[in-house]
Length: 103
Image (tube, rainbow, N blue to C red; front, side, top):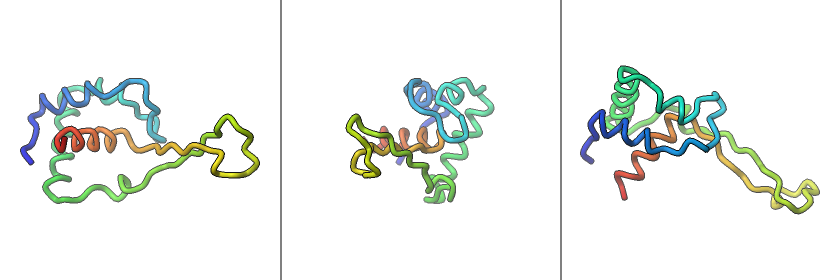
């Protein structure tokens, strides 16, 4: 897979939606979008090191899952919930990049 330039990476980050839940750390897409070029360059390089090594951080292999109750009564039945998965924001940006590149 051909690597994106830093400008293409920044364009990818800027295309991410603003109205999504932030990660448990509190970092949102908006914060990623407002990083200066030095920090964007660091994140860009880090992600491509992960791709070169065919490995990601152990922390990025974990997620936080929250059950959200559906409109019907809960009655301690998990089928009456909808699960959402909160990933770390840089991890979501990386996954977004991979999805765009693969499609």
